[in-house]
Image 1: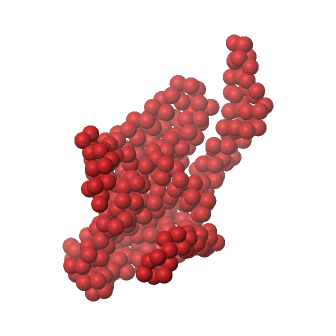
Image 2: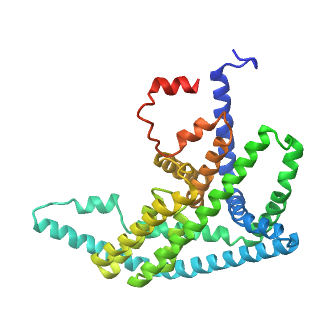
Image 3: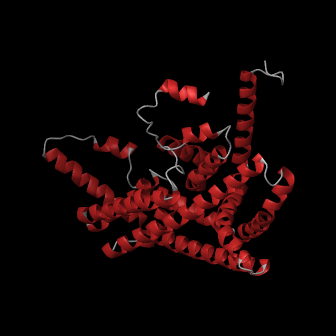
Length: 357
């Protein structure tokens, strides 16, 4: 028994019960939570230029005005792009689905000619490729409708930035300037700013590369797929694959197999360059998640917060990992959530256990 009077099993059950209650509360307040999470996302991205302007001697009100104008312009552009593109794409969606079904029927007939019999009706019932377009459009439409709540998002960003500017001073008074708590909090804040800033820049560059590539080959709605690539680049490992599927299918329907192959090559090159060369160089290999954790976070946050939760799933999980690795007591959990680590050949399990003790 612990000094608190509770056994380890009882404490675990209490923690699990509290977790379930918190998750249920977040799910019940889904619309409000999504708005606040998007606001926090914008605030973290806008914090570095806001702080930089203040360090350069720009008054707080002028710095805040510039940031608010920047956020408003980004929102306006995003909503305009999403609304216009999805409206046009939704009108053409039945045509694309019919074309895809026709191509599938031709493929089945070709296989039959080769003596390969495929249960076409069964495949159509359980695996509809045309749904890929609808899911992508619905996810972007859901995010666009949330982002259209401009007043609430901008107001929340303003308060978050003002609070963020005064937060270090409050924490220093509360915990002491050189305390362990203060060091952990400072490390967490620094890692969060580093991760979100670098990830946003790399995601934006990836989206621009995809947009230009699709534009060169004449793929319809290139800007829409570029925005989707930008958003899903926040989901490592599987995000780029999910973003590529609708664009590759559209290229196949619109221009044929060669254009579909070249579209897939463009996605592969963009994500190889940005994800495997640029990102590790500036972010470091430690700021990553295992493929299993990425998938589980995608399913969990998608269930709790809907399509917007799926797009924000990895940033939310990444913040949790950064918080865990900021403390010596919980760093082992952050290591388990991180990417694969190849142990040194001479480091056996018994030595690892001895060093941990």
